[in-house]
Amino acid sequence: MDPAIAIPNLLYTYAMRFDDGDFEGAAALFDRGCVVALGQRIAGRAAILAMWQQWVKTYDGKPLTRHITTNPIIELAPDGQTATCQSQWTVLQATPGYPLQVVASGRYRDTLARDGADWHFTEREYRQTDLVGDSSAHTLQALG
Image (cartoon, rainbow, N blue to C red):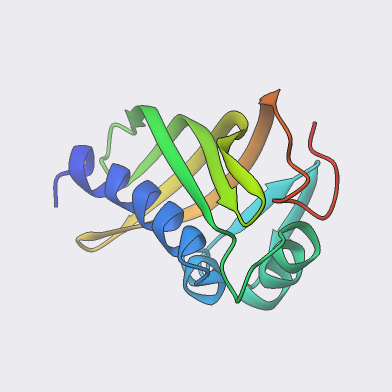
């Protein structure tokens, strides 16, 4: 598949699974990679799941969020087998007693590889949080 389609689709798949409360499915996207958060490299589905469980509040298993991923800047390696992608994220949330609002916005830096026709994450760095609103209904720890 064309990397200009496959790579954004991978970014959007992560957001959809996360917002659906399918943390297992989101973590599976990193079976051949890792997540870097707060300068720490987290590898393995169980470790990534544990990190999210320590960070994210859920309501009947769902975070009641929408992760909007925008502005992907994809740089394909000359051999076409690896790529980097910088993108921006914005998290919207509404929960009982908490009106729809922007929780936070920031940036990802992804490293990806092609395995045959399929693209996968080799690393997702939660690069920075640029703007923070009221995250009290979304996170178990302060954002920033």
